[in-house]
Picture (tube, one colour):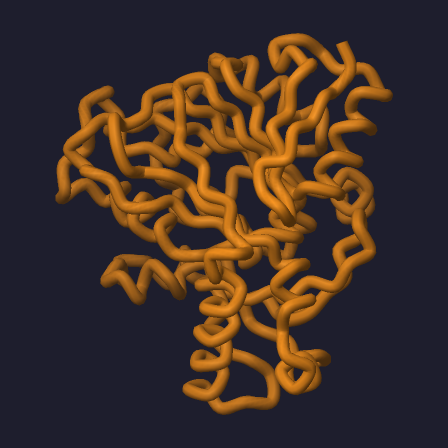
Length: 291
């Protein structure tokens, strides 16, 4: 069966069906998913539970995988694969992590609007999240369309931000939450990365405004001016009309384009078990060139 798409929001995001995520994809199906991502930026596959190996295998069809911040922190993992990123609240021994567990900083930081791994000097493209265990209530994930956010910006603001850059820091959001227990060696492994505050999304050809909680300063502005500008842009980009909210069910598999969206996980009861597993791909051609 060919890929089928059902829009979930007036501007972006679609439910995808007709593809078995446990099976290898042919080139035509990969191309059709890439094209759907260029149009919708977020695809939701329902009723497709995956084990660790299946998620890794399926994700790798869209590009090399990246382990993200774990490369700097060296944090232990409960998974068989370093490229599988733990977005839940499950401790290494399989229990629900207590509030004194350091991994919960990551859980809380994920509640801030961001795009994955923009703090790396690597060409990040897609992220994919597999729902293994979900809470009975709360814990939704939200995505904001940054292409529509650019379109909706006042012309005066467009002129103010175009041509500026922002520095993205791996540790900026975590330090703001009180997590300052990083060594100089860890901090040095992820120096701040300068990125355009406005870019053109390569798949759709549309302009994108690109703020994030990872942004610590903006070119041509004082530190407080830059941070206030990022806060203003985040408020604009995440207004209700530009956001898709997903309520999780076990077996949901959501794929999104980090170059065109922001996302965040909403608050939930941390005493309730939640197991979501993320993979993040690099752009195929850019990653090959860098290698």
